[in-house]
Amino acid sequence: MRLALLTVLVALCAALATATPAQALNCAQFKTAVENATNGQVITLDAGLTCNDTYDLPSNKNAPFAFTIRGGAGSTLDGTGKSSRIMTGSPTGGHAIDVTIRNLTFRNGTGSGGGGALELSGNVALTLDADRFFGNVVPGNGSGGAVNVNSTGTRTIEVLNSTFGSPTAPNSADEAGAIKVANLTGGPSIELVNDRFNHNSARFSGAASLTALDPNAAVRVARSTFFRNSAT
Image (cartoon, rainbow, N blue to C red):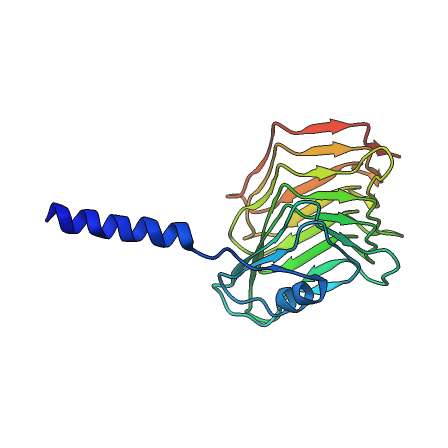
């Protein structure tokens, strides 16, 4: 019995050690994968690449539909010259999006209405982890210079270990220069943990605006730094 158990454990460890990680993709492959993501998929942009494109997350997937987008070292999504924000997710009807975005830089995005880099609305869930947002803008009366989220979902919106703005590349909007999360009744809680907000600007809420209207939801900000953000 012990020998059989030991054999199983050895086989399992060997399988884990030789498992193939998610293939790193070039810019064209990355766009195709993001716009056709499937539940449980991990999509990896190859290290050091800068992609100048826009991305529409799938809007017609039934729950559960959770996937991860991640970057190798130095991976960047650049919105320079584009007429819409870098990444948009807006599930239709009874569909859903649950996306984790990890270790990517979003820069120079411009979004009408909200979210110069990223906007999610509807039955959505989001985790940002170790991401960076520089020089993203929402012109006019929009909100969330880098990120704008309006969720009716249930999973906590998480922003972790991420950086918004720098002295030379601030994010800006009319409201919430860096990020706005506005969850309606029945929507989820919001957490910002170990983030840095630096030199972002807006007419209202220079760095962040966080609203959770559901009485059972909470807003938590912990171990985060706000430095020289401005509201006029």
